[in-house]
Image (cartoon, rainbow, N blue to C red; front, side, top):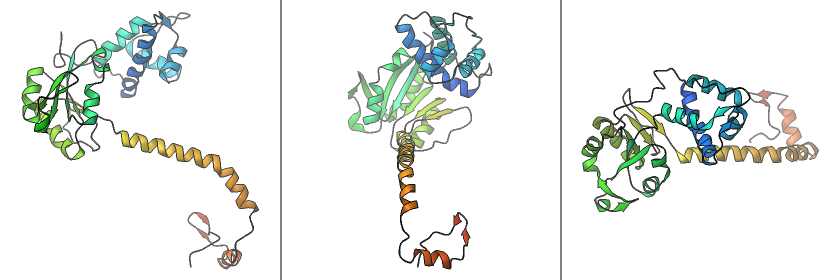
Length: 263
């Protein structure tokens, strides 16, 4: 079986936009689900809805692959699964090392979806000597002293960093020096890498903060009409009118001077 070093996906050489590349896994996931249900064909509208995009964008994305479907029939599900898998480089074996086998690293090691998507966890690596030799997900944890030899022996080009933030850059530097050219970073820090090395960052805390922003916004939208009504009908507090009048109608950078000014 071919390994990660013998072939690179053709997306860049064929000029497929990065935004399209980012959506291909979404299409593949939806198509795989259809394939598992033995659905032979799918329309662009149905597939777009399953992938969470609009159908015009889907048709444009597929045009980069040279796939246009058949009018009145739609797209052949099995062929599209193969076509997208080939474009993403998933028709071969990609050995991966995971560095940092704490709670998150162990969870990643136990994730069953790697093998079915073209990835093989070649080694689990940790800096803690007490972890060395302990089995996680059926693999013995290796010490970081072996990192370079593991990468060379397994022809690894993809590394996953699940270490604390303080150790991530050093691990990254060692991975790159050993020949790794793609890194998936779960550490809460920004990595510096040379040109030619691709980094994808997954920061769970940032994603949660973004969700918190949207929750706060939704809560504000729900309460604001009632608050506006109450503010419009409530009598002015003592002294508020005098202070507002004393302001002489001045406006600040954000509009009217507040009714209650600081003393």
